[in-house]
Amino acid sequence: MACSDKQRKDGESLRRSLLLAKTRAAAASEKSELLKLKREAMALMKRIAPEEVEPSAGKKRKVIKTIVPRGLIEIMILYPHMPFYGFPEETLPNRSQEFHGFYARRKAIADKILEYEQGLDEVEVIVTRGRNERSGLRRSLRLAKTKAAAALESEILKLKREAKALMKRIAPEEVQPAAGKKRKVIKTLMPREAIAFMYQQALIKQFSVKGYAEDYTQVEVTDNDEN
Image 1 (cartoon, rainbow, N blue to C red):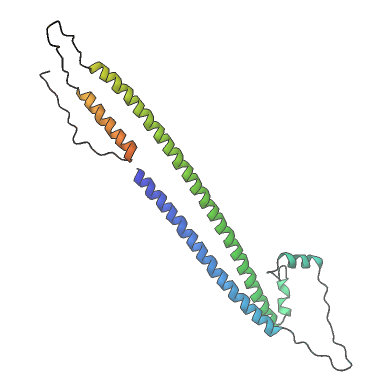
Image 2 (image 1 turned 60 degrees about the vertical axis):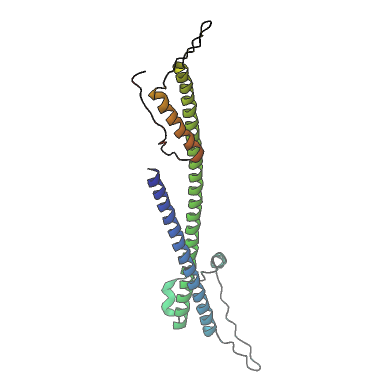
């Protein structure tokens, strides 16, 4: 049963590690793709940037001013990586082909950044959940060890009390010798129950010291029908 629980826990830990590794690899791949798209977008912006025409002598350069709503400016500040957030796509047919390409590039970059941020959030959630699970597992193991040690100590004390009571019952009686006579000693063989108890106590002692118990083959239990 303990082996099965250990295998199950090892399997869960392996699955969490694989999921975290896949998430990190995906995040790294997305980051690399995002940097590539940024470089391509910057190169595209340089190519389609409007050429500054030097004004002729005696002529002023024409400046086109556009009024931008305050709400759109606030959106640009809040979402710097999404310059076309809220842009009406129904106006795209009226735009040039170069603008179409620029819009598609910028939108792809914004989508990639959004996916990357969501991936980071998911990774953070997985890491936090893993920390909590490991912390809970450590607490459970400590509690289980404490309970097992307390139960073992209680069992040892109980067996010691039973052993003392048993030894008192089976102690050989010493008869005081009369004057001029040798003292007579009545020998009593230790019963099977006492030997079995000593065998069990030895196993418990070895388990508490070494963490495991082996079979004590040198302990022999014999009966003597004559006595």
